[in-house]
Image 1 (cartoon, helix red, strand yellow):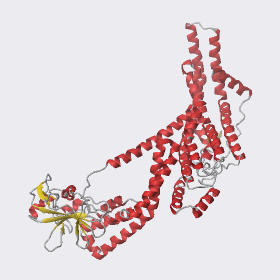
Image 2 (cartoon, rainbow, N blue to C red; image 1 turned 90 degrees about the horizontal axis):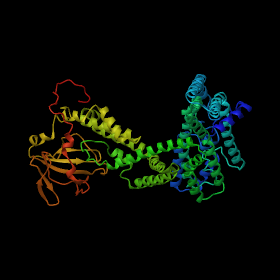
Image 3 (cartoon, rainbow, N blue to C red; image 1 turned 180 degrees about the vertical axis):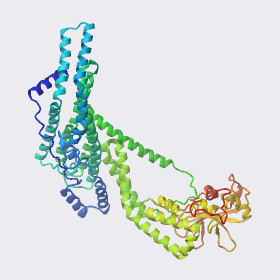
Length: 629
């Protein structure tokens, strides 16, 4: 290493800095469109002549997705301006590597700070060396070696930017040589998806385009990390040279050289691999070429890391490793979210109304053709996205498959969400009009339900029906607590399930659930059942006109009906209501049939009264805010 540094110093003394030719040049951004006009024309012709409806729709969805975010192409990163979209347009790059203001505002102040200490530290190093030699005799060779170390440090601190110019020039020359060679072979580097644009378009090429898009996103992050690392290393160049003054710290300079050269020449390694695979891509065509291209893209990261390892360019591999660790973390979070979702099998709270038929209509929950279509699109996206994500390894496949499997159905779902939300608004206002809007607003149960339906309809338009209903409930100013404790019209005046047996002894009750809500009702002799609970959870799988029912009787005897034996047995439940039937469905014609899909034992009437406030019934003439209790 010492001989190499000496030769470099002598070279720089004989051939001093020549004001790097590329410094301050303008580097305008190339086309930001993912696909060139020629490629778009090929895709359009394929959609018009050869594609199925599903293939055409899938192409439209993918094309719309990867154009959402403007990112630098592989061509710009490797063969052009790596920071095209991350800095102002036409901003000059110093040495073709980092923006000029980085050097003026970050690198130069840091470098000047360390170089200002050089003379003092050089004097200190010479004094320490002399003191050591006074204690221990030294030979002539050791004195010469130490003097050469001081000379090299002084030469490097003086000729630092001249040396850096040569290093950057070599990198730029290598990249420019590969770029001109590819252009001479007729390979177009002007587009963005350069790997996917070398032959005629087939439907499976969307996997290559998506894989290249994922690789673009990853490399954009890597090159931003590279900019940050090079900026820090250039600023600390003075400190690295100062480390040569002391024997105990001279290894720092070796590490600094290795990391600096590795960060700079990472671009050359990428240019070498891109040149290799682009030349190969130009010789293959047909359906098989898709698998070959995907294979080469999957090997992009491991092979470029391998080449950097061969040339001891460690920092380039470190940057890639940091990026892959980030990908692994995201994939782990995605997998954890899926596992938590699969374990989330809580017993439903029947007293909480989250979604109704409004959301079910928008989602197409009860439409088998719609579900088949969305499931098919989800699987198509999962396979295509997973294959494309392999360019970042197994973790990338998880992320790519997850994103694409959600993306395709969501894009198809958006128009239906809007239509479903509009129909929900129409039905909600239509029902309120038939009842009379003043009547709806004067009944706190109806008011909360009206606002909830409006909120759910609006939320459904953006795929957030549940959240929309919660916002609507809040906007109504009526909470379940207020309904349970208020004596207003629609309120239950502090009724709790414990009061049912004493207030309605030997009475019959019935649980009713539709696709709009549920509740407990008292069975009256006139055939009109009375709602005695807040409105609770709906079952969106029920058809219009269908009502799920379970019969109860007050008395608190602790018995429960066993349909399998046709007998009444003691129950572990402490509810004062005794269940006297299993679940059954009653349609709009009054016909009843058993409902084995619903376990009546899981139905807990207590759910509707959990939010009751004991001893908090307001007096009729008590002044209070009209909103939440």
